[in-house]
Structure formats: C-alpha cells, structure tokens
Amino acid sequence: MSTYLAKRVLGTIPVLVGVSILVFSMLHFVPGDPARIMLGMEAGAEDVARLRKQLGLDDPLAVQYLRFAGGALRGDLGRSLKSNRPVVEEITARFPATLKLAFCSLSIAVSVGVVAGVLAAKHHQSLLDNAVMLGAIVGVSVPGFWLGLMLIFLFAVNLRWFPVAGAATLRHLVLPSLSLGLMASAVVARITRSSVLEVMRQDYIRTARSKGLSERIVMYRHALKNALIPVVTVVGLQFGGLLGGAVIVEQVFAWPGLGTLAVTALQARDFPMVQGIVLYMALGYVLVNLIVDVMYSYLDPRIRYQ
Image (cartoon, rainbow, N blue to C red):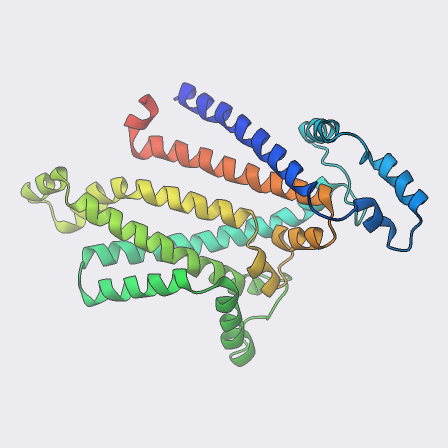
C-alpha cells in the first residue's frame, strides 16, 4: 500500500510542473502591461519602465518562470499587483469560505444523488425511476446562475427565509450550497443509477439471491460497495471543481471565495494573483484525485496490486 501511495504522490509532481508552466505562459500572452495597470494610464513612460525593471518584467520568460517556481516552492507566490499584499495571504484569507461552500455543496450532492440513484435503480423502469432521470436531466441542463437566481427569487425575495447574498451567518450558506449541490447531485444520481444497475446483473449478485438473502441485504451489503467505485470518481471531480471556486455562483451570491477573487484578479490583469489561484486550484484537484485513488484501493483491494 505504501508503494502504491508513493507512486501516486510522485505522479503528481509532473502534473503540477506542467500546470505551472502552462498558466505562466498563457498569462504572459494576455494583452496588457501590469506596470501600466499598477501606475495608471496617466503615468509617464519612464515611470512604467522603472517599475517593469523593479518587477523583473524585462527579464526573459524562462528567468521569470524560474523565479516564480522557486518562490512557489518556498511558499512565496509574489505580491498582488492590485493590492500589493502577498498573494498567499490573500488566497489563504479567501480559501476557508470556498472550502466551507464546497463541503456543504458536496454533502448535498452526495446525499441527494446517491439516494436518488439507488432508488431509481431499485425501482428500475418505474414512475420513480423516470422521475429521477427527468430531474437529473433538468439538473445537468440548467445553468448554475439561473438556478441561483431562482432560489434567490423564491426563498430570499418571496419567502424571506434566507438572505440574498453575503457570508455573515450560516443562513447565508444555504442558497449557494443548494445551487451548487443540486446541480452536482444530478450527475451523481445518473452515475449511481447506471452503476448499480450494472452491478445488479453480475453473477455474484445472482449467487447471493440464490442463497435466499433478502433484496435489501443484496443491495446494501453486496451491490452498493462495488457500485460506488465510479461514483467516487465523479464525486472527486465535482469536489475538485468546487474547491476551484464556482465562479458564477459565487458572483451571484457575493460569496467571498476564490472564484470571486479570481474574477477580480483577471479583470485587473493581476498576473501573480491569477497564477497563485490557478496553482491552488490545480493542487486541490491533485489532492482530491489522490484521495480518490486511496478510496479505490479500499473499495477494490485488487487495485493496490496493479
């Protein structure tokens, strides 16, 4: 098991290096001079040139990248061009809000999606099955911002149960979590249903039934554990996306997370901040995938020997 984990951890290094090179290269092809943005359009050419030299923007891209990568390894992602505060400090201040929103949304997605998928598979081709599949199709088709606006209109404006926007109390967390969680639950429900149906056709399930086990025991003790392997993959990807900050939904609810910070940094062409946020997002995906790999080996012990 330790060898399996070591291989997975080592495999994440090239991924992070590749992401850092890609993001660094792409951002430096975006039109706009960071020095000019910092000083304003009325600044003189000499002042702009002096600031570019101070920031190291005149150095070759390879030198700038190595300086950026070396700083990242030491936990230094530079300073924001907009606020002049350390990038790590600003990201760390916003990350708890995104983490809280991601966990709440994922809890809704897993609880609703897995239960709905299992019930749909258990009552295959019934009215309940059709209703779950219709709800899943609607869930994956509806844009997140539209669902968020509908939730605001119903629960905040008309019923006045929850606040419209902000993050001051736990009540502020309900609507954005529902908006993200319900969309993700549609995907989880579809995957759970198809996986359970496939597992229920396996020979060992027929053997379990032939032994006289009840349908409840066959489903929850023998079928569900194996059916959860593809579900874990989808849940991991969903969680990685939520950790990256659901940009539109955070904007709709004025949620002070990484998504909102990313939009602000892009609008200001704050290159160090954007690089830092993207690296955080990539690191989140990598860690979540590592956890998914570990869960694979728990659900199917044969995987750790491959």
